[in-house]
Length: 285
Image 1 (cartoon, rainbow, N blue to C red):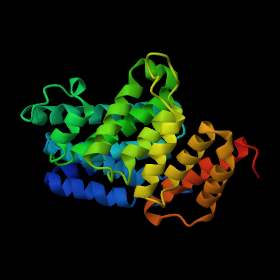
Image 2 (cartoon, one colour):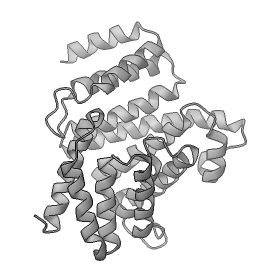
Image 3 (cartoon, helix red, strand yellow):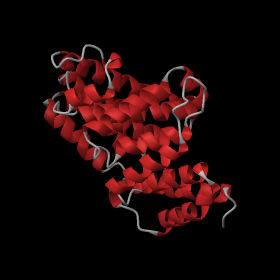
Image 4 (spheres, rainbow, N blue to C red):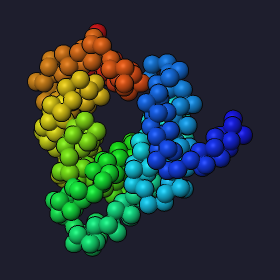
């Protein structure tokens, strides 16, 4: 396997960056090939990872190759392994890649009045970055990478390392740049963040189940068929009020009883798995 991967990398490095990214995109499109439910065969996503890494080698300033690599690593970590330590390693790689991209983006934004990303307001960063190609996707996948890493690392430990604030700012900026990125992705991440973040006084006092429901409902209007958003929304609704349980159960049944989108076969299978688990946790048959 290692020898085959080495040959693939050599072959990819002979291509221009645009062709390398295109090869990654084709393997990304076929990422569900050989999957069993929410368990993906790693072959296609590993090929996508190799292609995007090759593109970064060929064109070191590419934001596109970096956010697409982060996306591929997210899928690999979430759907090809159940080993927590392996997931930590993969999601940390995704975090490092998006940090590289944000460092590159910061250099571009200096000419637009943003001296330091972490010192500027979300609104001012979004305004400055809105016309920079791939900036919105970079912020969005940064929030996703940090979010997944936080889940496997431990939510409270991640909060102490500043993960919640990082996810909050990156997802908000992505949403402000373009709410359709990730099919309502910024709002989806924000809603999940508000629902899942441990409430720590003076640190994450902003977290709110009411806001979680608001953002997730907004995300669902962007992509009404997204089963992942529906599961997140159902969980947030019950967290907000037990009076919402009947509606939340109906939403989960919808996840289970409606056709999957073939373009998101693995992701929707994962959402159905999570829907079944929530119903079981709530004592619903």
